[in-house]
Each structure stands twice: as C-alpha cells, then as structure tokens.
Amino acid sequence: MQKLKSFILESYDEMKNKVTWPKYSELQNSSILVLVASFIFALLIGLMDYVFQTGMDFFYDQF
Image (tube, rainbow, N blue to C red; front, top):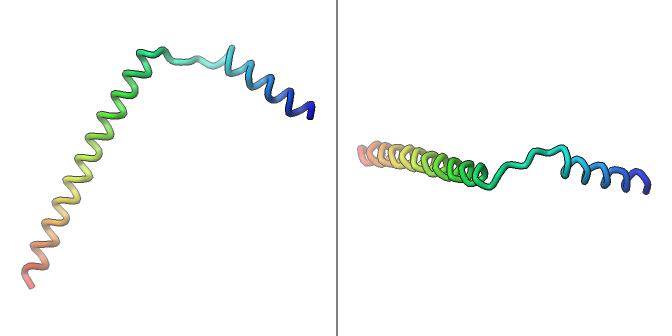
C-alpha cells in the first residue's frame, strides 16, 4: 500500500512541477491546425473514393 501512495504522490508532484503545460492560445492554434488537416485529408479520401467509384462504374458498364 505504501508503494501505491508513493506512486500517487510522485505522479502528482511531477504533473504539477515538472510538466510544461501549453498556453490556451497554443491549444487553440493546434486545434485549428488539426481541424484543417482533418478536413483536407477527408477531402482527399472523398476524391479518391469518387474517382475509384466512377472508374469502376465505367468499367462495369462496358460489359
């Protein structure tokens, strides 16, 4: 039980004193970057799906 208590106290101390937490503005910038990158990635995947589907429809319509 003493090891668990020591672990919790050391973890709390590390999270409070040794971890560098980002500022709110940095979090906002990072979040916007992730949203834009996700949107671009979704558009690329959608475009690839559309091209593949159109190509397969064209191929199967030939027979």
